[in-house]
Amino acid sequence: MGPINVDDLEWDTLEAGNMNVRRKQLGEHTNGEQLGCSLYELPPGEAAWPYHYHASNEEAIYVLAGRGTLRLAGEMHSLSDGDYVALPADERGGHKVINDAEVTLRYLVLSTMSEPDVTVYPDSNKLGVYVGSPPGGRGDRDLQGYYRIDDDVDYWDDD
Image (cartoon, rainbow, N blue to C red):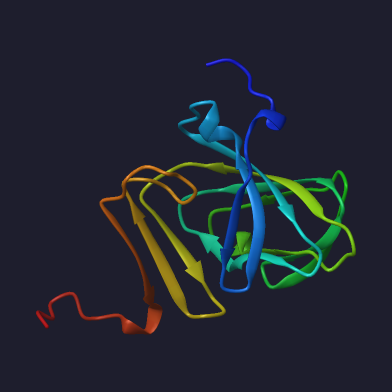
């Protein structure tokens, strides 16, 4: 498949919990298999996704326009045009993007598209499991779910 132009794609609006963000999945529209790329627009006063990190997929953020704050590995960092940050596939890559400015924050998120993957949400003490299609993928999943980390059971427990 050849190049696409971002202006030819429709926005997906993601509204869940306290999140309201627009996304165009560029990688999906070019048949990307091992590398995903999405364009995000985050309105003022909004935050994208709960604070999390992936156990299998590395991500990166590149800011195109606007200002905001990145919570990265528990520390706060300012974001502005031209900023790039790598998000390793472990606790060091824990992240949440917050638009605390007065203009829309526009940025790219790049990601490896490995599956299975586990996503850890430290603030809510949960984890997500994805088998059959990686996070951000739209394929059918054989297994997907969110679980409280404290609900761990013994390997040999049949109950």
